[in-house]
Image (cartoon, rainbow, N blue to C red):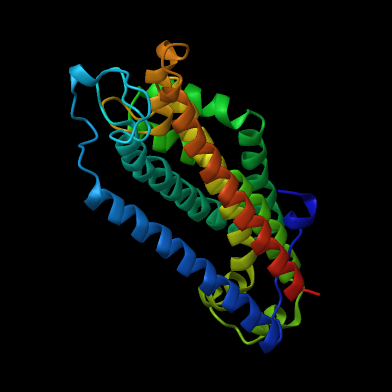
Length: 286
């Protein structure tokens, strides 16, 4: 995220600009739904089970029978990549969503609270920022033990700070707006002010950050699984598949090429969607 996007504040926009953004979000939702339907159709059509071993078909190269070849246990790589989508994309969606919830709560509390409480929350946030995210996640997952649940806990603990800082920045800008002042003068309950005035004006800026964090989380999940701290065998997950294929990188390079391409394409697609969404949001603020 650039400094420009960090300072993004979405004010009440004209109807025409809002409708243009709404149309973009609808098209994006349709595209995501179509991709989901394609994955569901592939689940129904694939003749293989992701964890079914066939030692007679070990390390077969890509062919018409096995499009992405087979692994060291004779399992179909294409089927495992397909099932791994649920683990990689699904877990990243969950982790980025949980991190957003925690970060938004902290950021709203800091941006709309007295200065001493704001400083207290921001110092806690800065202390988490002092450690590289992936290194901190590895340390937490190592202390808790290698498992999918512990990986989720570790990544949520290191992902909420960006949401908190962005939410605080946007909330501080919004607190100077006339409609926020008017709401306070009308003695509206604080929770209603947050729900009716802050969140609707924060959601688009946070959505831009969330798409970026979703992509980053996919990389983090794959990295932790590759290091043995994430999703455990025999579950089909892209990082775990890269770990399994590492020993056969020279004799069967397809075991690393195709899971690596799955990570690359998904992360690149989410980043492009985030850039497109940021451009649309910035146009609404012109």
